[in-house]
Length: 308
Ligand SMILES: [Fe+2]
Image 1 (spheres, protein in one colour):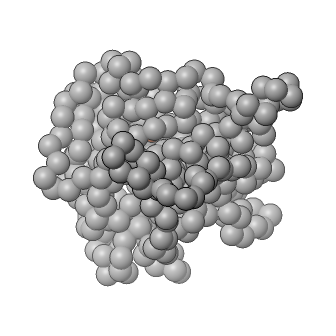
Image 2 (cartoon, helix red, strand yellow):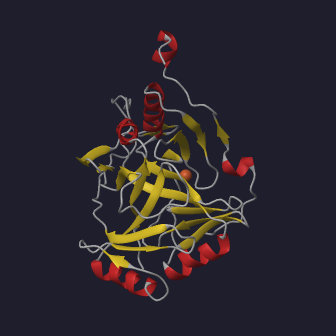
């Protein structure tokens, strides 16, 4: 069960045009487009798939309106994919596509899938920064970003009323590793084949179920600011940010997503190994964000011209 990470999320949406415009502005590349399916990809070729909400073959989602309908995890080989399918078939329905993708549900009823990963290795130039005593960038101007180009589909967050049961499912059945915890409130998990702090966060929100947000890794902090201000200028609404999480250490900026929930830009998340020590965190505003702005920021040009 060496799951590598998130491969794809399938959204069912009420407005394909608005959804498509959102992901283009967010910085994903449109890989294909048809009347009932548009596929966007990160630089690594992780994908966001948008489908009409009333498409017959969409798996069920726990909430009405535009939302995520299926979460696909990537593995290295078809043998590994098939092994997960065989194990899940011991107590639930499993269906295998013509392309070998296995579809089933988790213990909270979310539609999940497993496929051979099509992600490609992307070589990103290391951020060349200057710190006291170490000149990382010499005779060279730093990059200014007009727009983000997300590299990597990093994690998602789901609400679950049965937190402990669903934790057991992801740990015992799919091999996920708990990396941090809000006792009684939420678990952060990395997939066994990933070194990211988390690929999945399960959050107990009372009796609520549903998709909360999806996050994308960027190259550097300048891209987070450049991409975020571009989104604001295109009319998209900040959910929260920019800011910084103590848990996973990353900078964040969340935007309200017309496909449901939010979409997050991330930079500088922790990478961990089996030597990482999980911590029980108190569920407080301070553990969620060291600091944050509530409603985004504007570029200086926008402030000067008054055009928002
Ligand atoms: Fe996140």
